[in-house]
Amino acid sequence: LLSFFLFLFLSSLSLSPKTLQNIRTGRTLSYSPLPRSASLATPHSAPSFSPLKSQLVLARCREDLSWVDKVRNKFDSIIIYNKCGESLPSHLVGNKVVTISHPNTGSSDAVYLSHILTFWDDLAENTVFYKGFAYSDSLPNQLLDGLTSSPYLTCSKSHMSQTHTKNFAEFVKYLVGETEKDRFFETDYVCVKGAFGVGRNLLRGNPWGLYAGMRKQQTSQMEEVDHFIERMWGRLFSMEPRLDHKSVCKRRNKKKKKK
Image (cartoon, rainbow, N blue to C red; front, top):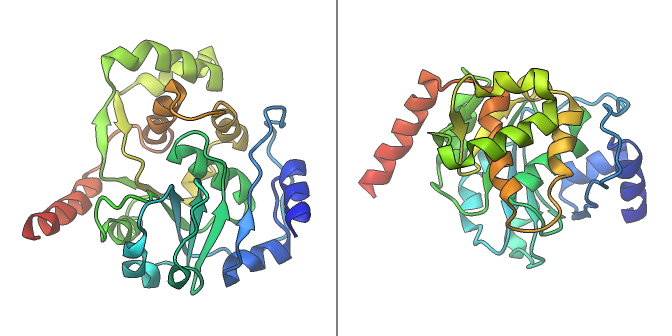
């Protein structure tokens, strides 16, 4: 199964019915990183499947994920990308939760990009991307609820630091070219902290090759490019903050104060 999965990933990043079934039923898989020589063209379409309504994608490196039980029933599927090799408690795996081993390169964004590239043809209708460290036990649920009224949602909106602007501009220019670069700087709004939700249609509104270009820059840990990629999500999905973002964040903050 491992060699079969790697073959499909390297050839077209499309998944077979058998592999998709493994994801849905809770078997542990392995992942091979995108090769630097990979084509940036959109892969051929995979066989048609009924997509999941909701999925939680977690980037984990030794964090305690006991909080996952509090959100398990909210999502159709939870995929934990295990970056540091430490096994999960057995009670967490199964019942809609599966693990995929992932190289410890890049930041949590490397996991998010790997997921997008691998499951491009079978992305859930709504996906919440989140770190193993829980900012709030209820935040994944609230982000998912918010996607009913907004195709993109984050509680971590911020503004670009001036010290990063020049190098970030060069990174964006590399990804989209000189003529398209300026539209990413119509606002300095960015998403930080690596927690956001996005709908499939909005996510796939950007070309597959753009995500592949971002992912192939991540070859080791703690690189400057990781900060740039983290700040790309807000630019890719929402050029300005939205009011419905604030309503979700306020609910989260009120609950936090009561504790």
